[in-house]
Length: 400
Image 1 (spheres, rainbow, N blue to C red):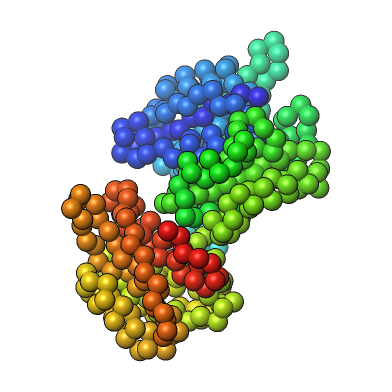
Image 2: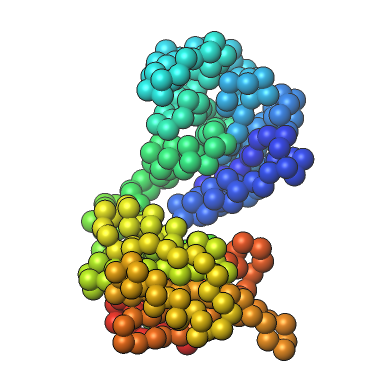
């Protein structure tokens, strides 16, 4: 099957906002074996929308669109699809009830313009939106002699779109495949090597067209590997995924820190809890990022690993940083301190950040070379500090 993706909104065509939805949907469709043959960005006008949808339906089996489903005057996707289908918009009671229930649950009065969100082309089905007020639209394909692709229109809010994709659109696309079947995913999270290095360590696993398919993405130095298997049953999918996961873990070793929704801070807190560690944090250049990540993970897991933070100036010298960390550790009655110092530059203009794990008996130091730009480089530095703590808690050797 082939798909086209439409992103709708003046804020996208004028460059005021980056279209991340289309990139995300392309990856998801690729994992389903659907070929994406085009992306189109469309302004908030009926004429432009009609042209874009009509052309995409003629070229593709599936048209995925995001944006334009809200209650305001510039949200025109409903009107566009009604014109494309040659049908009137009709009020769908089930959709209206869902919108009213959402407003009631939030304790807010619903204005009349929100009723527009319950208007769908006559032949379309509602795509439920569990986290927002705008339902999606599922406009069916038309058969020969003039076949036109099926349209799935979703809100532009990423969190709503993600949920609606998982709950409704992905299963519908799987059901469209001639061979039917089902699909299972397994996600592994890695830290400590770059995307290209990880790929080089996994010979022939990350190759288009293989089954199971292994996709790789990078976000703020966390590398995500997603194994996707398609088969006649869930059990067969899991059986196909298992040896691939085993190979990945064997090749990458302790670079793999977690799975599924795990983040690095979650894995770090779990290892600290298992090892009986209570952690104090002293930060300089990372400006509280490490403490925030630890505190959030600690709260999610309802543990008491994170003791608190001291964000006073740590001084550039590593010795000063260690002394401050020791004092903070004692003050907070922690048995380990994680210290991040201040930036320093070498003769070549590169910037370095000292990181240390400090206990009553030992000090483990690491010099982190800052890469990236803007806030991204500090986010990477904070994750490097967390990974040092994870390795210390798990009894793993530090990365060189």
